[in-house]
Image (cartoon, rainbow, N blue to C red; front, side, top):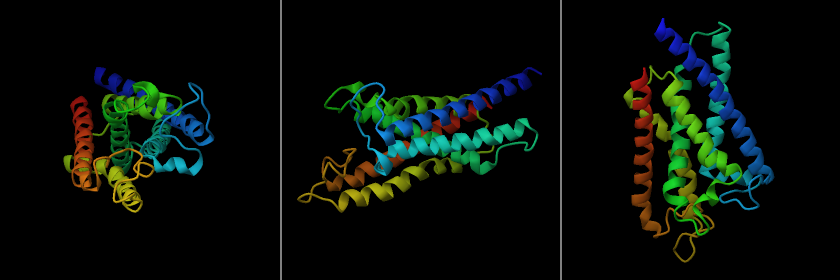
Length: 227
């Protein structure tokens, strides 16, 4: 009986968090695309309109928002008795989206913010407050504390790396087709991953992919421990 009550509470907590994740993503995306500033007149790694999609931050957050919306809808169907559980592919997408925003937050906190020429907190203003911090925290909390990923298998943790691989397929050619004197142009290498030259790609990309998989594994392990 006690276990059933805990599962029910976890379900409703997840239901609420997924709605908040989606709502926060809508607000943050609107702020980014329209240039709305509600904390400061300045904002790093932002662009108005479709240009904003060049940022992994935006892509990962929109993915998280869409996945949260779909989960919210299926959870509503569960409450109505229409379905018994979420589709397995949706659980994998949840792992992938949560891994992606985790990477977004970690890269910001441990690489982009410390190397910022302005201040550490400059990257957490306006829409970036949601995209770099709040949304990732909500996604992580929801996944490891309240989501049921009991059918996810260890080999499927690699699914968490897929969005990062897809982004790398876009980012790397974009940098290497806009070299300036044989060196990466900061205008196209906006994250500064190749600041030490083009050959650093052989180190940077494997490290990022490995870190991404590590985050996927940690999320998987924390979720599994709660089952």
